[in-house]
Length: 124
Image (cartoon, rainbow, N blue to C red; front, side, top):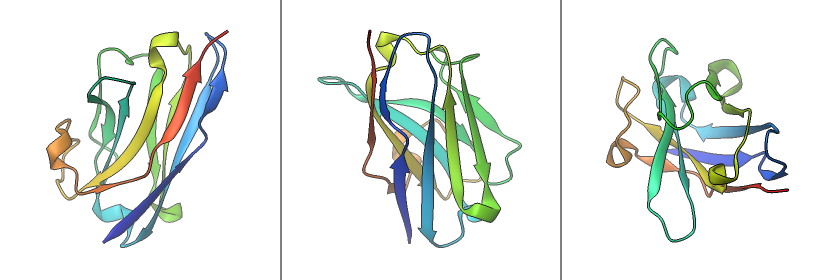
């Protein structure tokens, strides 16, 4: 069992940056792939990025490539999503999730544990 808590969301102007954190407790984060998803009002929850347990396999959604960076500090049991050059269309609730799969899966159904989400609003 893994418990996940996101933090770092907030209001930012277009072009700005935010760093989201995902603190894990319970079993070691080292054993899991970590993913980030987001959900805008009235829309489905979409894949943002994922990093596997070793950190050597990373995937990003096309919409965030070159702007977002995912990382994971197994020693601190914490994952991160660095978001740069933010756009209004990045506005959503962002969720971190943990998967027992060994690869950086992009499939929402592959994730076993979810955080409660943190709101990111990009607006001037």
